[in-house]
Length: 368
Image (cartoon, rainbow, N blue to C red; front, side, top):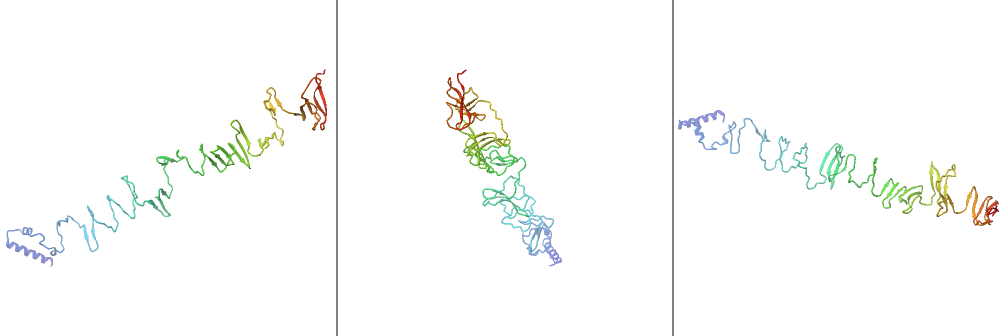
């Protein structure tokens, strides 16, 4: 049916209505028609003005919804509530705020700004969870791996900040925390002040034994408070008992006291002492005090107290009750009379070397 036929039909309907009720407005008659009395099958095309129904209200002045066999196109969509599942095949751009109870994504790409101070939580299987930075060479990680946090990269803190444990600083930019009492340091730089409690080993050369309070250089088992070992010889410094100190060699080795890298005093392993050096010029020995030899209680009134014979200028000086009958003697040796008396001699002198040589008395006592 074309538009002319429709116009003719409506005109005929109007004439018929007017002929029956000439004084009635046709529009009033239409208002009295029952609802839905005009089937939608009788409307093809055209525009319905101010269309509305119980669930739809159309107040648009421009086309907002378009339908075809493939899709529904909506220019702007405002929805108060979406029930059941929602699938978005393309991109979804949200200019406002999204509030969700649970957000589950397979791949999240975002510039995050956490403004509500809520932490990021990992639940259930948290091992291996954390931050991953996928780069061109390898994946950088900062993740939880069984009772510890693992970082594949260096961690750098700002200047004047520190690493702390339980609120106590353990490492700062230039120092270790005062609570650090144990370490296995292998190499350190320059030290200024060092306090060590307990044993200590330096380069397997210097050893301090805290059990015996002994320090050894070149030995792990020092035999003195201080022991220096080299070429199989150990020099010790310590105490003989609670009243005497000692210094010397621990085993059967000679001891030399040197100056200018030359031996000045030599003490043999058997106790023999040599003052000076046979291979060097003679030395001068000065003694400020009294000297006693083989005397347990020296006489404090004399400077030299000798118990036994002496040699003076390579000549023997000895006390006896008479001339010797055995032994070898040199000319000039003197035996002093140990039992002087009036009429006796002061002593005897060897006038000819031999065994025992020839002896003559001298210095008769009491004779003018």
